[in-house]
Amino acid sequence: MNVPILYESRMNNPYLFHALSAGPTIVRRIIAQIPSEKYDSHTDPERFTMREAIAHIADWEAIDLQRIKQAVENPGSDIQPYDEVQVAKEHNYTASDLGEQLSLYEHRRRETIAYLKSLTPEQWASKATHLEKGDLTVYDQANLVVGHDAYHIEHLSGFL
Image 1 (cartoon, rainbow, N blue to C red):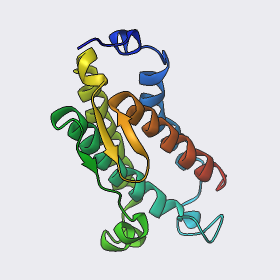
Image 2 (cartoon, rainbow, N blue to C red; image 1 turned 180 degrees about the vertical axis):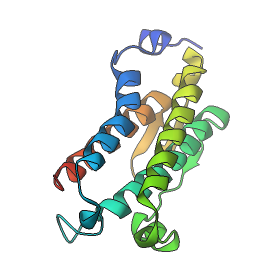
Image 3 (cartoon, helix red, strand yellow; image 1 turned 180 degrees about the horizontal axis):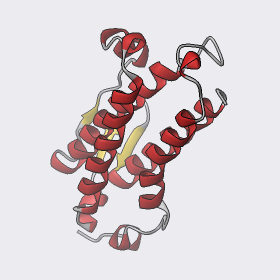
């Protein structure tokens, strides 16, 4: 397989692993500044509470890693979308322990990073087809994880 240079170094985005590592650290720093009385309030009625958001990102970390592994282990396969509102109900985000979910997010992120660091250049180029987003390489998916972090970091900063 002729692998583009982009994947040979995995450094087309030289900040990728730093950003992946920083997400949970930034989230923890934000939470440390917010009184627990705000954990169940909304900054926007259409968005998660802080408690729900942390449970969501902990869940999504496992989903993202599973999707990345799917692209590596079964290239060309279809990635099924999830209804995040339904998952929130099924997993009872409103009653989740924020500290436990934050620790789970951090743990799962370390697993994601370790897995990504173990990949060959060819595996970084592996693709799966998300039924809503189209074809995604492992590299694309890793960058989506960073984007997802940024979306929730912006949301969580609204509680400050």
